[in-house]
Image (cartoon, rainbow, N blue to C red):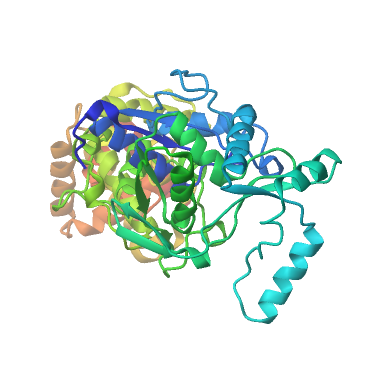
Length: 486
């Protein structure tokens, strides 16, 4: 969506500090960020901590660190004041009290004194009658003076907004078009709790207005709440922001994405070695596409292409195989120098002493790049580049190591010993000469030779391995294999 006045765009990501950053939260943050940057606007981070019972210590710091890791940097928020703070809801309680009082005074809200026990009794009766549970309006018509007296006497109360008795509430959604909901199915929502904290519904409307939010881009799960927010905007007489509700994230079986069926925390994927570029690229495509066959994007390219009009309504499937595909694509895009730095870090974390020359490691990168999805694959799939094989794959030994393999490899190592600074082609020519001299096919040398130098039966090109290891190490490994393999 292109905005007429791009500098009027202000969007926000407003998570609760309940622990980790869900991949769905990352998508919401990312779409807000991309929309803001595409339109030259501002992206805000606001912490919605009004439910103090769910607050997790350190969650805010972790959230900010995770967003920064992903490259989703906010313009305004905690520690980045843009003149609209505080950006933490628990620091804004006076504002919510002020606007709750205004609604009561206008007749758009009222004090409710119902006890939890009464509310539970009402709920059970409604369920017995197969009705959708909702507040029955018991306190809706208490006179203002009586409500004041009861509150001053210390009786506990909440503030509920008044939903119109009839009619319907409608709003335009950029992704879903016109949405209309009958007021009869809406509840007289609690907007200020007895502990003095607002509920989401009051706080989000007050904050979005005061922070001058122009577009609200959030998950589909908030769609049923939006009519209540629309009514609050009308009660206050405030201009309405534009809404865009993103599709649900689904498991491959089309159930809602949840921790029960796998990892859902961004931190989990980071710990597994996924590149931030791959995860962001993958998450961007969970509901959006550029309208053509392109799939691999950098963050700058996503900013350039993103629009809410290309976000669909249908649920988006979180497919781990597709994420791995993006990871592979972004690994291939890394330069040799980038990969060199990453590989050195992997060697360190794997406890392997890095005594290797950069030229050696670059050779490993060249041989393994197209066989690796993660940086750890350079070590886990080809450990023989860093330590000589301590054992040999039993299945490969049984299939490839023949009674005369030792004698044939002895002859081959003699041929190798006569080479001087051999290239890949030199190793290949030497093997060819040995095979011709022994009157055998090349395969009768290639297969046991691969086993001898790597301990495995598959991997990158054999002559690439020999060239990287070098003549002396290759001969040494052949001799060790001859001694160890029976």
